[in-house]
Every structure is written in structure tokens, then in C-alpha cells.
Amino acid sequence: MTTPIDILIVDDRPENLLTLEHLLDSPELRIVRANSGQEALARLLDHDFALVLLDVQMPEMDGFETAELMRSNKRTRNIPIIFVTANHTERQHIFRGYDSGAVDYLFKPLDPQMLFCKVRIFLEIHRQRQALQAKTRELDARISELNMLQAELEKKNHQLQLLSSLDGLTGIPNRRQFDEMLGVEWNRMAREKLPLSLIILDVDHFKNYNDRYGHLAGDCCLRRVAESLDAMMRRPADMIARYGGEEFAAILPGTSIEGAQIVAESMRLTVAGLEIEHADSPVQSVVTVSLGISSVIPIPGCTSSDLIQAADQGLYQAKQAGRDRWVRADCVPVACKSPWS
Image (cartoon, rainbow, N blue to C red; front, side, top):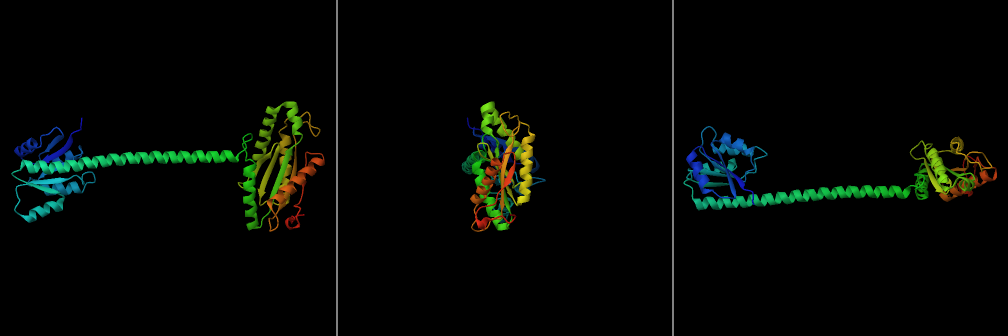
């Protein structure tokens, strides 16, 4: 069933209101009456009117004043007003009505057919406006839903990107993220002419650990080592990554070789300080690490792979020397020779 449309009729004479009400009698309309301009303004606060039929000649507040007050209110300024008047001879009178906000005129005595035709036009406009508002709300809701879906998609993409850059076992950056960040910091240090240090470390005799304690214990060991190393990264640009298997690598932008050596020694002591039992290690009775260090100011002719190779060479020498230690190695190409060597 269609909801009746509200129309406000305003006249200070009850007989005129009855006449209008009779002429407008229809199941599709709900007629609301007001006996004065003040009462009309009060009614406007309680209803969403499709149309106001407003008598011009009223005591205290006439139709012109009432219309002007309606137009000054944001809630009622767009409601169509048809003035009902017996004065249809003075053009100035009519023009004042349009200036006050009227959209049309009806003259007394009322012509039922004219009244019906004009009211029907504004009712159709009201229905179209309501349909447009409904479509607008539907569109706004759809846009809001799409925005929420877009935000959720971006969140999921961010999570996927984050997951793709983190090691699944330890939760620290993986080899892919390490390679990306090393390239970024290499270029940044080249521009700023600052040293870039790299530490590569390996858990000593990790195969023996897995063989004795099992792979689940081995995974737990790697997680604890990763957590302890990650906690040592104090600056935002510093990064520890799982380099592969039981190997880890730390990128230290703006850090000299002396600073990198201090960090490496702290790493060695921190891992040993975890006191993870390693009964089958020929080095110590707890898990230890060996570390290779290299540092360089990137210059033309030198690449980040040279720095990796140098740090890896230092790691190899640390293992050859008995493990549980760090060894510094300089970049091999002459163009990449460390200024601290």
C-alpha cells in the first residue's frame, strides 16, 4: 500500500479549510490543516510536506511573511508553495508572492479542476524527488560499501605484501626483503657517501643440533636466535633477516667497520647468553654463532654483491678459525676497498 503524501493547507477561515480539504480528498493524500502562519510554521517542523497551499490574507502573519520564513529555514526552504488568494487583479501583489517564494497561484473562488491539475503536478515532482533521494541513498550506500571493500582489499594486499617479505618460521624479514633493502640502502649510502656495513652469521653446528634434539627443537632454536638478534636492531634503518637455513644477515646503514665489529660481538654474546643447550657442539655446551663482517662506502665499480661476498668470506674464516667468533673481511675489488682497512 502506497504511503499517503502530506499536504499542508493554511487559511485563517475554517470554511476555506473545509472547502480545500473536500476538494483534495484522496486516499493518496494526507491533509494537514493550519489556521495561521504561526501554526503553519509549527506544523512544518513535524511533517515532510510535498506541498503547501497558503492563503495570502491572514491576520498577524500573512502568507508573504510565512513564505519568507519558510525560505529562510534550511529544512523548509525547498517545499513548493502555492498561494491561494482572492486578489488576482494587482500584478504587484502577484510579483510579491513570487519574490516571497511562491511557485504558483490559485485564485478564489477555487476551480476544482485547476486545483487538481496543479496539485497533481507537484505531487509528481515530489514522487520523483523521493525516488531520486532513494536512489541517491542507495548509491551512497553502495559507494560506502565499495569504499569498505577497497579498504579491506588494501588491508589484505598489505598483509600479503608483509607476509611475502617475512620469514614464515622466525617472523623477521626474509631473503627477498633482505635483497630489496640492501639495494635501497646501497643506493642511499652511495648518495650520502656514508659507510654500509653487513654482518652474516651462522648458527654453529646446527645440523648436529637438529640430529640430537629434532627439527621442532631446531625451529624453536632459530626463532629464539632471530628474536634476540631482532631486538638488537636499535635504529629504524637497521635490519636483521633470515638469510637462509640457519644463516642470518644484518644490514647496518651509516655504520663504520668499527661500529659493525661492536654489533657483531654483541650478537655473539647475546646468542651465547640465551644458553640454549647444545650438547653435540664441539665449540661450547650452548648454541653459538660465527660471524663475518664487511663495510664499505659504495662507489662506482663496486656492487652490493661484492659486500655480501666479503662478509661471507669473513664468516668462512670465522668457522675455519674455530667458530664462536667474528672475522672482518674487506671487499675484494680494488674499487670497493674499505677506507678503514
